[in-house]
Amino acid sequence: MPIPSTASDAATLLGVSLSADRDTIRDRYRRLARIYHPDANPDDEAAGTRMLELNAAVDLLLGTDTPTLDTEIAPEPVHSDRSLTTRERRRDARIKAALQHLPYGIYVVGTVNPAGAPNAMVADWVMQVSFKPRIVCVSFERDAASLRNLRETRQLTVSLLPESGMDLAARFLQPSDPSKIEGRSAEFAAPDKMRGVGYVQLEHPDLEAGAPVLEDSLAWLAAEAQQFIPVGEHILALCRVFDGDALPINEGPLTSLYTGWHYGG
Figure 1 (cartoon, rainbow, N blue to C red):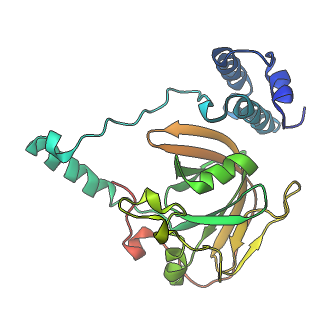
Figure 2: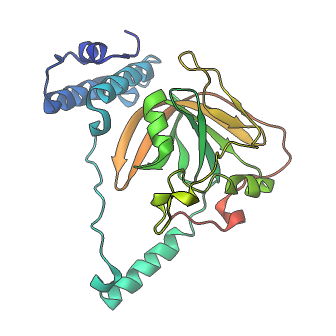
């Protein structure tokens, strides 16, 4: 059957009633996922589509409580510096320094809300995680406006900037909600991030316009969210790539090695 768009369709696809409790839905999803997952059916080209249908169905029924096939990694308890011993603080500093040496690309992730209004954010934690089907993983803070858009419309773009795009990337660093930065008030709200930026919005069958692609990107991808996985204080979005291009720009990609910006640690 096609990808479900209503709770009734989702329940039918999973083989549960609309009144089924959350544990029943999670258990049914896990059972079906283990049967139809592409890893279990490497020669079946339709396996990826089946998983897309299952993921959409369980997300419709459970929302942010969507299960994973493995145990969720819970956030570590937050300790103040005063609660740590000198030895623990030194070890924490060493770990942070090591993690900050991991190189990342500087990506502009574009999303769109149901009204067709575009938004974009800078993301470092983006990577391809599957060939067949082509899946990219993007990590979002749980309260990100872009994650909210993605949950509602399922569409996402990734624009990889050239080394000359550092100023352009900086436009998207500020969060839409200023309260996410300690000590900031509403007067520091980021202006319309897309104003004055060259971009095109992809076509979308159900929206006025789709997610934005930056015109000055080195390469871009368009993908549809299949699954949301809670990991610590972040949410991983697994997205199936359906379009993309590499543009004829004679530059290397903008990365954390060039900018000196660090998100890890």
